[in-house]
Each structure stands twice: as structure tokens, then as C-alpha cells.
Length: 120
Image (cartoon, rainbow, N blue to C red; front, top):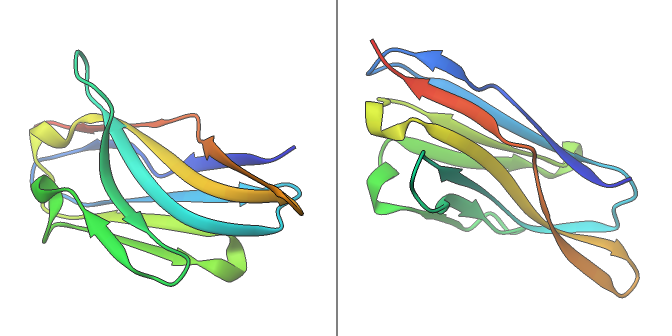
């Protein structure tokens, strides 16, 4: 069974740092774009950052200069390094990936979500 498993969320004070990880497992032919989304209470889910299989990155304006997305293709893992965290970064963070799971089948997968809370 193909799945994305996230880890690394938690409670951190403003100005602190956290690193999220998301590993893809199961029968996977290849992984295309990977990314992180977040959803705060009462708000829509929004893109935080994405990275292509070639390493090109894209960030939401609100996190540019503070967050860094990276991936380890050998480990089928994507990371989100979050620095200078602010209370408004508080949300459930979801991993997202486009996975080729069969010769002619590519699907979008989501992780279960990990809570990030920034508070003093």
C-alpha cells in the first residue's frame, strides 16, 4: 500500500525552528513533484512549498526566506525546514506527492497531517 508518512511536528516558541519529514513507501515506480500544504482552523488549505523531481522549488510569499524545502530521492523523502516560526504558522501541515504507482498510473497522495503549534 502506497502511503506518505509525516513526522516532526510539535509545539515551538515564536522564533524557533522545526523540521518536518515525509517519507513515501510502498510500490512506487517514481516520484514527481512533492510539497507541503497547511491548513489553519477556519481557513482553506494552502500551498507552503513544493519541489520538483529536478529540485526546482516554489514557496508561498508568507514563508519565503524562513522555510526551506528539500528532498532525498534515494530515501523517497521530502523535508521542510522551518525557521523563525511565527504564531501565524500554526496549522496542520500535510505532505503531498505525485507518485507513479504503475507503468501508466500516476496519482496524487496526501499524508495524514502533522500539527505545528507556534506559541509562547
